Image (cartoon, helix red, strand yellow):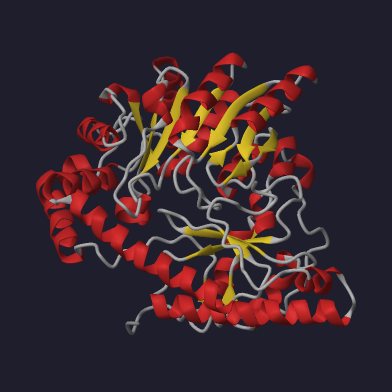
Amino acid sequence: MTENSPAAPPCSPAQPYSAPAVLDPHRARYAARTAGMTASEIRALFSVASRPEVVSLAGGMPNLAALPLQSLAEQTARIIEEDGLTALQYASAHGSPLLREQICDVTALEGIAAHPDDVVVTVGSQMGLDLVTRLFCDPGDVVVAEGPSYVGALGSFTAYQARVVHVAMDGHGLVPEALRAALRQAADAGQRVKLLYTIPNFHNPAGVTLAVGRRAEILEICRAYDVLVVEDNPYGLLGFDGQTYPALRSLDPDNVVYLGSFSKTFASGLRVGWVLAPPGVREKLVLATESATLCPPTLNQAIVSRYLATHDWQSRIESFRENYRERRDAMLSALERYLPQGCTWTTPDGGFYVWVTVPEGVDTKAMLPRAVAAQVAYASGTGFHTDGSGGRQMRLSYCYPEPDRIREGVRRLAGVLESELAAGRDAGGNAGRALAGVGAHRARARCAPAPEVA
């Protein structure tokens, strides 16, 4: 402050906080569809699970340790230096032409023959999912989805006031007869089923993969009932044996909308995904993108495009596979060693997740605060259903923690489960009876997921 500067006004004393008389004075103004907007159980865990003393087996954050950060920093600086006037400017809602060509090369690994014009770049595949739901679903329409299903998809469906009908899976993925029965029942009831939403490869949260022999049958069923298929495939290149499966889109491009993402195979923070859609749907998606974001971030697209052009990205994906395979193995061995008898779990061949079922009488949602107190976090199965199912299930994520942390997290979780079961025995409840009826062999359920999954 100079000599002639006016004196700063004195600070007024802090006023005591008083709660507003009405918690939300805007409640009467909201659209009816906001009634379906609820907080995700998993997102609500983040603030707790991010504490360093807590072993988080809850979130699905990719492990980025294998990325060449120095090279990426240099490439990003070069993009801004050489092409900054373009990379920092507005662009087409359709997405970068070069990146759309490169996306076609990526999807070709799963047998998809696509043209760059088929691709609409989005701010992560979640945006694509939201836009597809907005385009197709009126209030009261039915969306069929596996039970359990991805929590982000369920949030979009309910936000647009669609009704979700869950269809059973087994160890080979979505069960065709269960799908046919659900569509027949909806038709008999006069309900409009608009979409089948499916995660065919290394399912989130169940960890299972749709059998190749079922894929054409499921597409035929959807054709017969005039249902559009939405294929969400963020994990398809992360099979632990390097195998890729034929995308549903490759088998029926006219009736499948495919959602893809670089979040799991490159960098989730860049938020670059895409939609492959039939021409009519594609045009409406471009219009919907313009109204939602005007255009996807140009710089982020340029970073992804430069990475694909200058790095051996397929070898990098192999590094990710090895990383996640090691963590998967650590989790499975820890589950076998520590979990009480009567627990079962899936054995994923790729992706990020194991789906665990606990003995009867244990409620995983009610148990979660006690697990957090024991410094371990998981995602309760109830968050992956809209019909109240999943109370005996939990999703365990192995993608981010180091193997030793995974083993320690499972050990802590097992201690909490043992306490729950002991409390049930002391109370003479179902948990004690269920535990007593299980023999020494522990069913690992590679192809026999929990009742809510099967």
